[in-house]
Structures are given as C-alpha cells and as structure tokens.
Image 1 (cartoon, rainbow, N blue to C red):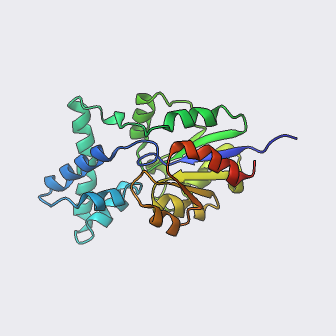
Image 2 (cartoon, rainbow, N blue to C red):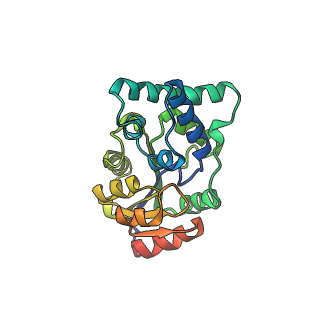
Image 3 (cartoon, helix red, strand yellow):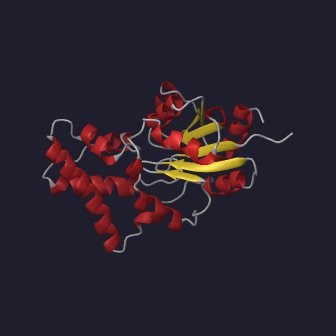
Length: 227
C-alpha cells in the first residue's frame, strides 16, 4: 500500500535560524532614525514572525500610520546598510540539529518540506543561498505574497502547491502566530522551545506538542502522524 504524502512546513526566524541579533539591530536603527526609543528586546522578539507592517503597528501603537510606515522603511534600510557594509546578514546561524533534520526529512520519499515565513522573498532567498538550502523545499511562502500570520493564507498555499491535505500537514514554529496559523489552516502543530515565544504561550495558542531539541522532531512527527 502506498504511503500518503506528508508536508512539514517550517517557520524560519526563531525556528530554523537564530536571527535575533540582526532583528534587534535593525529595529534599533529604525526607531532611532525617527528619534524614538526602541522597544525592549522581549517586545521586539515577541513580534517576530509577523509581517513588518503588522509588527511595527504593534510595537508603535501610539504613533500614526505614517510613522509606522517610516519605521517599516527604516527596518528595511537597516538590512540594506548591513549588507552594503559587508556584514553577513544572511548568515544568521542555523539552530543545532536543524540542517541534519531537514536532510533526514527530505530523504523520506513520502515527506515534502515547506517554509512559511514573515521574511521577504529577497531575505529568504539570501538565507537559502547562505545555508545551501535552495531546492530543499517544495513550497516557500513569504510575507510579500500573503496577509500577516496568523492568517492561514501561507499554509493554504502550501497545500495547493503540494497537493497534500491539511490533516497530513504539520507546521513547526516558535511563536503563537505559527500555532494560530496552523490551527486556522487545520494543520497539526509543533512548537519549538528554543525560539522567541515561551512554551506556555505556544500551548495556549494551539500547539499539540512542544519539542526541546531538533532531535525530537522526527519522533514527534512519527507519533503524531501515526506512521
């Protein structure tokens, strides 16, 4: 009997790569350029995963839309400046075990891999190039083409791209936005404890389970999918 195909979709920032230093630096630049005090580290990391306009609206709710738009542009400019200065902004390190787990999953004929991220297409392409991940994912959805998480648009497109049904699909992420998105798209949900939202927050948002190490992911998927 042919095994059904499964889809495992990963968030990027805080799940596959630890990009917090770049995010914090860019946010500090954006707020400083407007003469504003940058929010705290915990507040900034708390919005990682949202699309930039939504993220800045949450971080600067008392400022007008025009200022929020300038903050978005300042954040983008910060990354451009870092690239032009020769800083390896695409080289946010992969978390321990991430690459080995991706290769192990990709080696399973019945398993397809995807990405759903708040990054831009340019940012994701640069990261794929930096870590030699190009071609590993059957579907890659970015903030340029969809409403911000937790809207399920990204995951629904992943299903359309791969032909996999929702009950055979899993979202792996580190934030409540990933878990809420997964629930809205009728995906199974796995939270990771090493990212930017704590375990309690992940479970409250709908995580079926939370893993502490990438080595725990494949056994968790095996148990959840009944394979």
